[in-house]
Image (tube, rainbow, N blue to C red; front, side):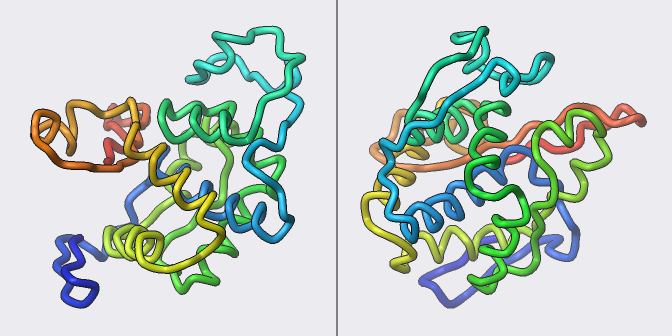
Length: 208
C-alpha cells in the first residue's frame, strides 16, 4: 500500500490479513510513547530486568548480552533492542510495563486504525505459532499508521524523534526494502518482521 501526498492511495491485495511478525513492535512503540507521555515518564526511565524475563529459545540479543538478568535498563535502550534488533524478550518486557498487547490494540483503535490487531506477546507466539496469525494488519492500515506518525503530533517530540531516528538506524533487513537505497542519499526508516515456518513448511511472514 502507498499513500501519496496524504490523499491518494494505491493498494494491492489489501483484503488479506497479513501476520505482522515483529513489524508490530513499531505499533507497540507508538502506544508506549503515548503511555509515557501521559505518565510524564522520560525515555531514560529504567526498568528492572530479571533472569525470568529473558526467555530461552527466542531471538534475543539482550539475553545473549545479559544472560543472568539482574540489571536495570532504560526504556530508550529497550526500544533500540526492539526496533533495531527485533529483540523478542525486550518486546515482552515493554509489554509488561505498558499494559500488554490489549493496551496497544486500544491505542491503535483510538487513532482510527482498525484493520489490524495486536493480541499476543512474543512469548505467546513462540509457544503457539498459530497465534502469529492473530497479530495482523492490512497493508493500508500499516501505511496509514506510518502516515499518522509522520504527520500528526501524537505525543511529545522527544518520543517521536527518538522512534524516528531509531527506525532510521534499524539494523535488520538490510537486504529487503532498503537494499537499493543503501548507497543513495536517501533517509529511510523501516521495521522488519520475519516468521518461522508453519506446519505446512510455509514461512509465516517476511515483512518490511
